Image 1: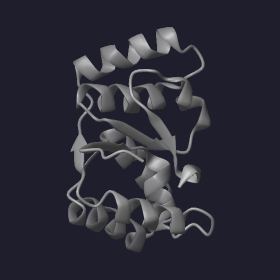
Image 2: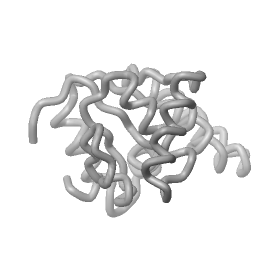
Image 3: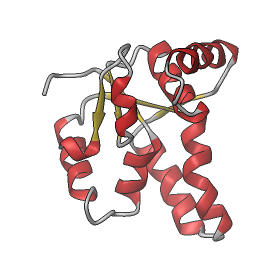
Length: 138
């Protein structure tokens, strides 16, 4: 795989890694090893998607693990602003079956200059502005 300088992390890869998913955790470890010198970006959408379940379960351990991980990996968490929201609307207009949250994630990745979008949502491979790679490909 090519060298990337800036990678966008969708929510699923973070879930797989932090929750030590049986199938995908080893793949995520391999990913971190191969791309350890990259800049990582995600959005406020990931914060919401990841933390919803731990807050429902009052699982302070998972909440703290998420914050420790994003801080420790120096993952830049981008806010959703008007520019990102408008880009997401353009994406949804073109890719009619993309969900709003996915479009916000893709828009953030594009506008932040990411060279790769790491996800496990196969539908997003249709997107042409940034390469979308699935965790299962590692």
